[in-house]
Length: 488
Image 1 (tube, rainbow, N blue to C red):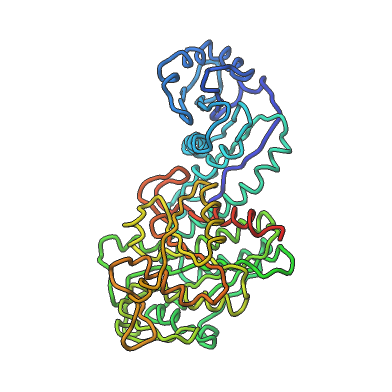
Image 2: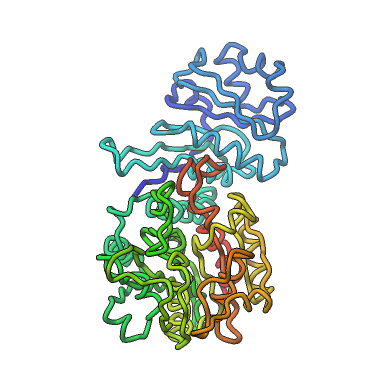
């Protein structure tokens, strides 16, 4: 797994500044007021800092801007990063500045000087943005950089950062899973990586195909029947609370999606290694909860399959039977994620009677048309759970937007030969997919469906991540558990 940058805190020591190698970062008030550390740096650099403050580049800079002085005179450091923030900065500006520091970090050391207000969020952004996926390169296994900050209360700041760093490790795990190619991350190797998380205190159970057949998961098994890779369901339990029923997190884990017999176009099919993004997010969230010893009961379930065309593959026109007992007409074999989710959702409710259920999936291209790559689409039958989820996502800087549901959309799924169709046509494609899933939500089960097709992996860098897998949702789910489910 890609390692996060090591983070530590020390007491203020102005005498150590001159000899510090790597990078130095100074958090500077937008009005140019010099702190003790800033005054020391100004003397060491022979007034370079004062000249910068008087420059147009500084006076016209937006909050969150980082101006870099390379190879500054009087310092052993190779770069001095000036972080421009007001006394009471907006969280978006703090994250922007932290991400700039993380992008430049690589395998270097970074010493941060300046006020500690919102320092945890600044460092969190730096840690997240410093990610680089290199597992498939010959020079893999790069040593991550280190971040140290001089503060007045090192032990207290260490405690404040602990939960944020646990979530960051969960995000990195998700990114590694989503970035991995399909010949590396098969259903079996995926399950093995999840099983290995027992070392963190999770209870992990892998259900094999014969067990899934016995349970009646005909929809999930139909998706994987064209592949040589065996279909699996992995159950991860974190029991950190009392006797209350758990929150259930459900993830779509299609390790590669050709579309099946309804074959996708060749252009862009290589990106379908990310079609297990929902399962990756659930895995990362469970890792984060275990690492920080969350005081809540949470169960994560992921359906792992591969959707391939072959002589044994599911065909358009087939009628399959779900674990619930509903029959499903398969009009399009590329609408396979909902077939995986519906069986895992029903199993989760039957076995665990959860207090709430959230499923995540790279489910539809239609959600990208509607929301682009800035927001995941959220569908729900429960305002309280949905509002708590979108609030948690907003608080950690992850975009989420609620979408509608309704009987009119559900009617689009009507089938002539079966209880339901797996697709409802092109109009409102994301909504009809959610309506299909809602059919498998039991009465009185609070439920949210999150379509992360536009946010799980992106072509351009984001605030927190380089191009590729983002780990969207790990931090939002972790914050949701903290705010709504811990301490019940």
